[in-house]
Structure formats: C-alpha cells, structure tokens
Image (cartoon, rainbow, N blue to C red; front, side, top):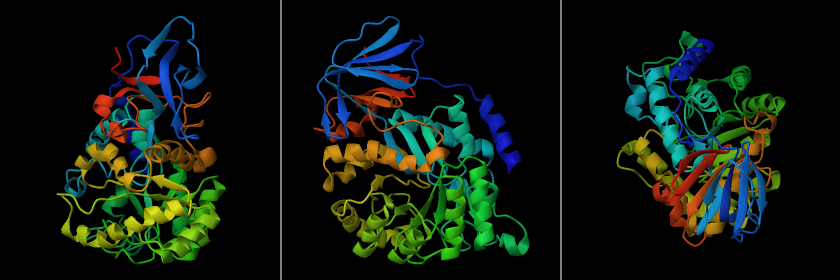
Length: 443
C-alpha cells in the first residue's frame, strides 16, 4: 500500500499547478462595502470592510482601510459569506461511473485524472471544504495541499471499513474471501475499502487509515442501497467490533462515523461510542432522542427518488430511505439535534453539477438563513470533531476576525433569494480559499 501511495504522489507532483489566482501577488485583499452573513444572528450586517492577509481574516471594520499594495474588491450590493461545506462526499466514487470502477482498464492514473478534475470543479462551485466519507483519497488531498492540484480542503476518512457482506464489500461474484483464499479484492487493492472481520482486523484497518492521515474513521454499521449483498435493514458489526474502531480512533484524538439507516444499527453504534451517524433516514423518535442525549451528530442528506442512470435494483432498495427522510428532517429539527448536511453522490458523475441545487431541497423544512448556517458554520463545527487530527487548524464556516479566509462573494442577498447559491457560475463573483483568489469576476 505504501508503494501505491508513493507512486501516486510522484504522479501528482508531475501535474502542472492550476491556479485561478490573480497574477499580481498582493500583501492583502480587501473586500469593501460588503454585507456579511452572520451565522449567530442569521442576518446580514451593515456594509463592512474585510481585510484578508496570510490566509486569515485580519480585520473587519465599519470604515475604509488605508494601506498600499492591496487588491481592493468592491462589494456594493453583494454578500460576503463563508465557503460552502459538504460533509458527505466521495471524491473518487462520485467522479467515476460503476462501469468505470469495474473496468479492467481502471488505473491509478485514470482515477487521478477523473477525480482531480472533479475536485477543481467542486471548488469553483464554492465548496471550499469537504469531508470525504470513504475511498482512495490521500493522493488527491496531498496534491491539493501541495498546490499541484486545485480543489477544496479535504477531511479524509480513507478506505471504508466493512464486514464481509457489508455495505463496503464490493467484491464481484468470482472474488473470494481474503481470509480464506489470501487474495485481496480489487476494491481493497485500490484502497477503496477494507473488508475487516473481528476485533483485530477492525483495529488494523482503523490504524492503517490513521497511519496515512485519516482525520476520522468511516465504519459501515448497516445495509446500504448501492451495495449488492446487504439488505438495507441489516445491522452490521458486533458491538465489540465497533467498539474496537472507536477505541483506536479515540486513542488518536478523533472519532468514528457510521453508515446506518435503522434504529437497531444506530443504537448499537451509539452504545459503542460513535460520534456521528451518516444517513439515518429510517430512524424513529426514540433513537433520535438517544442521539440528542448523547450529543451524537446526524449527518444526513435529502435524496431524490431516482436518477436516469440509477440501477433499478438500487432504486428499489432506496424506497424506504426516500420515504423516511420526509419524516427525519422535521423530527431532527424539532428535537434540536446537531444536524449536518451532505450530498453523497455515488457513481453518477453528472450529479456533481447539481451539488449546489441540492441545498435548495432543504427549503421545505428550514429558512434560508438556517440553511446557510447549516452548510457553513454547522458543517464546520462537525469537521472540528477531528480535533488534533484535523488537517487544517483554525476556524472555518464563519466570517470573523482570525478565521481562515475561505470566502464567497455573492452577487445579491442569498437570505432573500437562496437560489443565488445554485448559480455559482454567475452569482459567485469571488471564490477564495486560504486567502487565495481562485475566481474574480468583479471589475
């Protein structure tokens, strides 16, 4: 595995740097006359002047700032808000079709080409941070952090950890068990998943991900809709196995998130010490109350019933999930759970272009201001569960002095018209990550 990452790292280093930043390097960037989205009051401020320097928001004032060698951006009629955050992406699985995943021609180079382009387009849609919820992510993250590729900040989970016949068991019918026959499956060779059974194997898989830089661990605790072997209703991993992953993660100062839909799976995960539940669309009030009492995050989505290219078997498996989400969102809001939002696009690359518009689907339950807070400040709070394993120290999801300068300048007022954020090509006139401008349409 180490050789695999070394070879990919060499490939990444050979890719030319792609940059949308201004040609002139300024000491500072100043946004003038901008109204700032305040996630505490859920309002826009009066016009302010915001100075960015060395990747941080240095100052916010009510008066103009006099200084030389700065890029001044006129924000009259515009809103300055934090960069968008998606806490459930699969950078690899979301950039490739299932046919490409299964193709004998698939290679590390093909993966990097597809995934690298997807990462760049994601940043240009205003997503400055994402949490990768499982897959071969480390080479891409290293390339972005080194400036060799363009993309969002990534909180990586590494390979998903799944039991045999679990949601992460992507073996084809002719692939036998590694434990009995000694050969890792294709998905394991591509570092997409670990098939781990028993406490010892779960510990090893968890520690292997942490070794390569995982900021949190993704465990499959229940059935799924995109996997062939497991019905949605099944519970996966015993308490001891889940507890092993939690203990290993806690020893590294971070946490475990679980893929799970049902009360039985989620209750077992909470008992084992899991801090975040992904999906959960089939949960009942009793389980949500337990999550509230234990301070467990609900990281969920608002999925569509089907898409043109979705496999009919997957459409059928998704039915109870789709039916459940209409009850989940309002129940979770009423109970005041810690709620985070993500997309979870898999094997349908064309869906990525709808990433922003999927945010609008939350309007049936939340106000525009509540939605903006969720996809910025709330999602940023979830990212900070990684503690010292967070790859990017500093505050995100807010426009405040001392916070990291991940910013979007929106042409208009998204509190009044949330559809602005679903049109990033025209309405996101400035996109900044880490104090660097990747897009600037302001004359």
